Length: 410
View 1 (cartoon, rainbow, N blue to C red):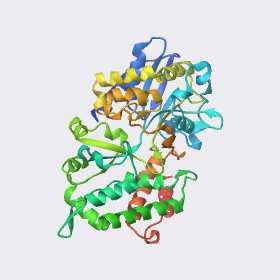
View 2: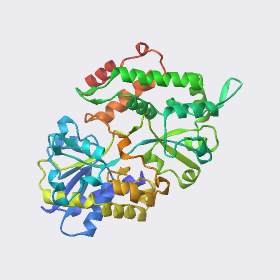
View 3: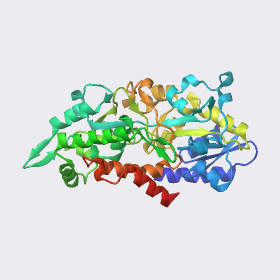
View 4: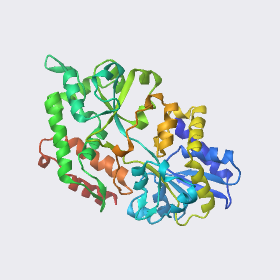
């Protein structure tokens, strides 16, 4: 929270102090860009950027009728949004930007037909954390699959007088774990009118979770009793006291844990059938068609996507102690391979040699612009209910939930 306040103050200063045709306006939902804009303005004097924060910067263009020169944010790639953006193909000509520096599957997400409409900025992937003392029990040095989690959890469980005193892991402890399981099972949520998915795969994933909780932990009511009794402490404390084996976490949160916690914890990326899912809230960057200062916008983009620039930005963040609250580039791994694989380990030594190969990354689908609200208010509540029910017919269907929510909110 303090980091965000500091960045918003910088945003205000940048916005007030810069003007003119050599100035590019950036609209973003990532407060970190306040810092990046400030640094860019300090290292050269040909161009300037101003930075404004909006919860949904692309939607703000439609609401306000105004157009910035660069938009940085999530949910830019929907059908209604992408028609407003220019092709960025010319940035790769004459080797100004190298496509080889980007994770190929991540770069492809920003492409529509033959045009690179958006450049990926950062991404996150899911993981499980556990005590370093138990690292030797896990077969792979940087990934883990669901079957191994189940086996280790079963062996870890302790029951005393019909109640669990130690529980390895419950899929119901975190709704985002349920979503990750659904994605890895092929639920394939994607933009439609407003949303489509593979209902068979979704049912299969929640049947898998229901069976997991009953086979390994007796049942969801027993898990909830355990959670009520012990989860007054944060998961990392429960791991350290050996009350639980695993806890779900995302990379953005993993590397901002306290130093004390990081010294005692280890992690593995979640991988099923050689696929590591990329979280769907990736951050992308684009230039709107109606941008007025395209030369300044291109200058900033060409600077920002240089490996050395991102190294300097991470150094700058660390010098101001902002990196203690925000991971990496814009709260995630950089979309530039050399930055994530060579520079990140200098700042996060535990990452050295532990990034999954890029061919294992599972890219998210294109999602509607209001996906964040749909996920929070419709998808996750459904998964939470469905994972506790043996029969999908016994709960309010996802189709009806979505229809009801859309009728009220659209």
